[in-house]
Image 1 (cartoon, one colour):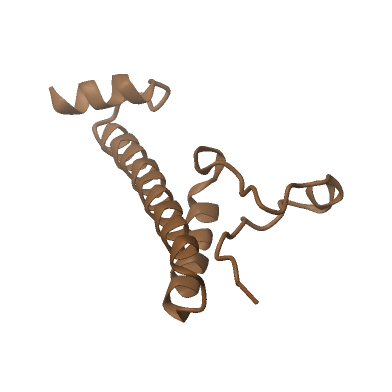
Image 2 (cartoon, rainbow, N blue to C red):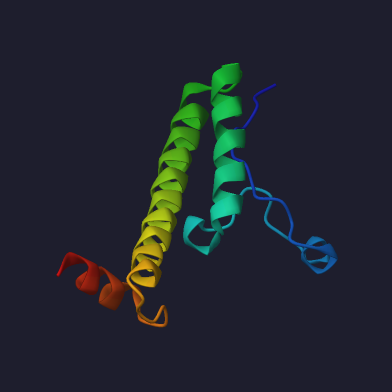
Length: 105
């Protein structure tokens, strides 16, 4: 029997579990919180380390993992920019682009 590596994030609550979901379609990476992305990335890594999946599924899982890693890093970069703004005593209500522009100045 072939094992698929595709992993989905945990449901957010009872309402999410009651809604029908496509079992083969994980939530888009861009919609995940940092914590959700890291949890799914850990599951992807564990699945890849088990070496139980066919090569094509492993490649798809690796690609998903890379996307999860980029997404989590982008979130961290945004938070770091916000921290720098707060430490500089500026308002944290600026957009990400404005925050980065001020930090680079």
